[in-house]
Length: 511
Image (tube, rainbow, N blue to C red; front, side):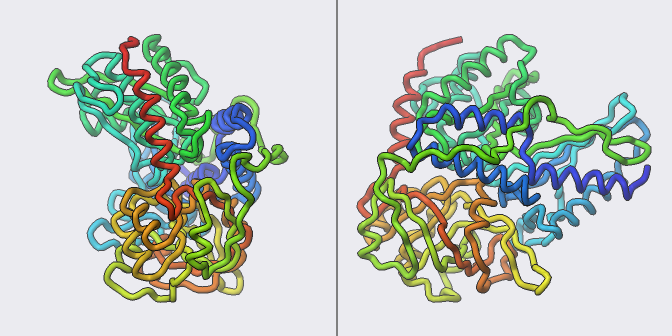
């Protein structure tokens, strides 16, 4: 086999997966966008998502900044050297990372050191299988940490919040799958997709669930009972009112695919793999002799470009858009309420897990009094003048910082933190005590927000790696929604409570 051509084919697969959302996913998002109520936060979010999809396609840049763990599933003819393919995949991943098509996301689990090239022990994930066809099939999924953290596995029988007992039958499975959507809320960048694995053991069940994510969004399950279950879950999940980004609304789930395998009598697992709206999976067929691409998967039907999609009106229930420029005073913060839309101009600083842990016991490298901290791990690249530029910069899931956030805000005088998915009661109490707000940006909208960043003015703590460093960003028109305010109000808590009430309506036996 021509290994140079194979490396180029895999590099093209990685680039396409990262930057160009598949046709079936685009159609699902378009359907949700058209069905959403105009003038709501959810409609505004879907507008941003649509714009982001087009920008990523146009710029050939990452749709979402979170590479996740690149996971390949490869089928090869008998006699093909899989060891060589592994080496080529690693080279292609390293090249794509160097070209800012992927964020360097591989971290040593013991030291926290970032390898810088998405390689490392066990990475990228590669799973091989032989088959009797004469070509190679290579599937790739880029599943970010925000949605990966909302995967869930149930051991039946079990008791479920809002739904009661889930037994070892199809109705118990139904309850588990509905509960999996409820527990994800907006933290997994809803509206999302789920793959479900019934049976197996703990590891094979999750494998089966993730395998369902490679199915086409609009296919029909060959098992009539599972086809009925998929349709039921898709319909009922969208009655929970969680909505896009957890803001409330009509679209909570865009697809549900279920697979089944045998199990042992003692164990009954239902495993759910949650995937965000930025559903980045692609596959190619490769000539086993030349290494060239013969066919791209997911090419059926219309491709929605979102190039000239009409924008909805501003959310009608909200006040006027508030312009924010740091440093922000406590008085300004106290004037903001849940539902307000803000546009940020000026300076803000990124800070993720490593930064928050560091700041608990160290001084900040900059004066953070009155400033905005953005929960973001951007994709960065150097330009021809050796200056850093932002290639992708969407928000990360904020709940991971819950143990630290309130203490850090009070310690350093931070007035606003921004991310996605909301935070918990400890942070909410600190916002009220200190005078702060939580701003929810649109998860996955990495190109939309990168376009708002006009310059990179510095960086600190690069020893933590590019995603975890503290980047100094100058922004213009950076839009977000106040979802937790200084008066004790949390949109996330409200939506979770109302969606639990709606979940309970589905407690009665159906199957």
